[in-house]
Amino acid sequence: QVQLVESGGGLVQPGGSLRLSCAASGSIFAIERMGWYRQAQGKQREMVANILNGGFTMYADSVKGRFTISRDNAKNTVYLQMNSLQFEDTAVYYCNADVRTVAVRTDYWGQGTQVTVSS
Image (tube, rainbow, N blue to C red):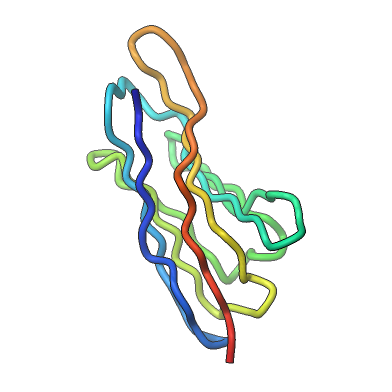
């Protein structure tokens, strides 16, 4: 079994910054991809950013130039640095990981962390 534990959410004013972290633990052989998704109230969950094992990154158009995803493979941890936050970034942010154990490859989700941008 694999667990993803997120931290770093909170309340921030427009233009401010937050850094999210997500640590994976458990029976991990390799993590092929780690990423962040978000779901605003009344909306569908959407991809924010992903980072592959080799370091290739992908971003939603709405966050390009403002958010930066990174990972520490030794710690099985992914980070999301969020700058120039806007009201529209308010959402629950979920960590997601494509994890390979000895036997299978499975998609895991964290419990979510609230990010609120408000003045």
